Length: 300
Image (tube, rainbow, N blue to C red):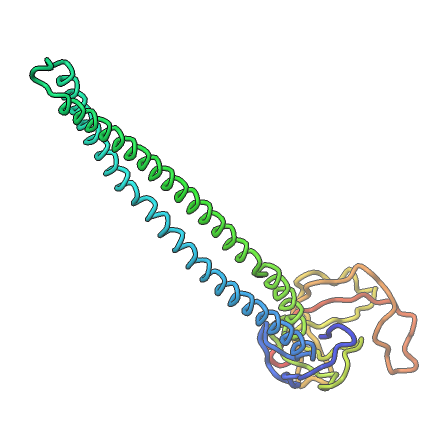
């Protein structure tokens, strides 16, 4: 197993003969800690931006509350407007009564109605009209004031809502999270993990070394062993799939057994050369893959 060249090996947690499971950490490269620092810096930057954004949004929320209270106060002016309308109805009724009384006095005979009474009633009618006009003007003022207050409050609420949304949008969550995700992906590549369940066969590097073209370590799954045999081409037609096979060697304590699971269609020169100087060197062979049975696998 290897890694990208120019990377420095920080630590190797595996050792020869160690049984490992798929996904278990075997080695770690120095870029892991560097990437962790970058990730921590980005997360701190995001947290700072979020803290500042939350403070600004709290201030905006307080302003929104004030604007909502101002709008509520403007809406409460409807009671004053309703009261003013009732006052106008009373003044209108009083003015109408005064005008009827004036008409009665003006239509009455001079012998029964004095000039002073008529003048006094004219003043009463004029006063009623003046009071009604003042009440009408006050009603218009109240209605206009309420309308302006409501429009101002609505405009202020809309502006504050847009400002709050802008503050939220300025927090670089998507950008920083994307950068962190990319760094996490690079960081995962800085950890060498076992691709399968198996046993560490040998280690080719030490901590502190730069990763080169040579693998850091080798491992294999020894639960199912295979033997690759080179068979002379003359025996090609005598080998068949699932055929039982026996493997013997001076290096083994006993024979191994298994079955043929594959045979090559290519005939070539042998890859394993005989140490016998008198052996034929021009013999042609093909490869046969034999899967050992469980007992032979354990023995191997």
